Image (cartoon, rainbow, N blue to C red; front, side, top):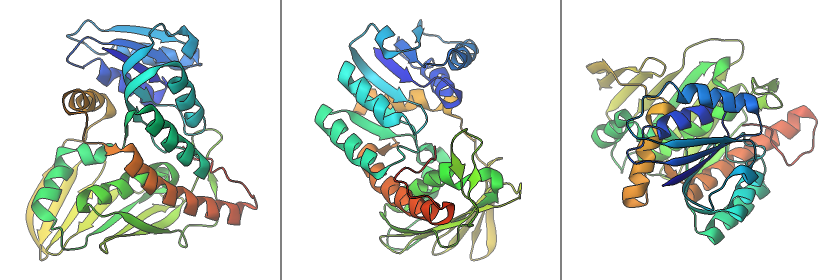
Length: 324
């Protein structure tokens, strides 16, 4: 089986580590214009003791790829070039299944173009919002959430959280827990000051993003400027309150304010997840990640509202939201 991984940096190298745990032999092409990023992937790949004799090629451009057909594509570049990368890959190669990193794209037009392209090429595509694949959150959904009751999810952490790059995880998580569609995002409580991201050339936001879902469920995602507060998740259902320390996996579950469970769950890393998604796709043509077209709808509302806030308080008039 053939796999094409475009983007070999921090997250791409973790995808590669997981791919090396795939249960069948893979011919893997890792593509990145940066020799430094390719070096990161080589180094991290060497940390994995694979039981399968995978073959990995590291190249700096797509023209260095010798195969024409791929069972799997993973695009782990930044959001800025992702549409161009997707277009180039689908022009050069036949792709059966794809996993794309988020944030997907930086402009509204890119979502329209990418959706059309993926539909035309009939690529079975997913977006890497992996919290919905955690056994812990699947159990929460099964045991504590009823379809006819709305849910409140409150996420809170320090400035390090990064609303631009991380909010999509929790917007997607509430979609998974409730099976409700995101209706609207409100950015009125975002801070006016727009800050630089740790990822060069990109921006970040602090303050609060709120959202409303189709059956009345609500979300609040907060990043506190100047704070290094650890991140916590609070999930409120009709009878239960679930408090989660995200970094450690510690959690408490209360029923009518009485503590009924206190424990911890395994915090999974990307290097533990990608191969499981690929195996699911191979067997069923689906996986626990959100489908591309469903994620696009969520992304479009998110990008639109943040872009409006960015233009309003940056003094710019742009169609591109520089987040990743």
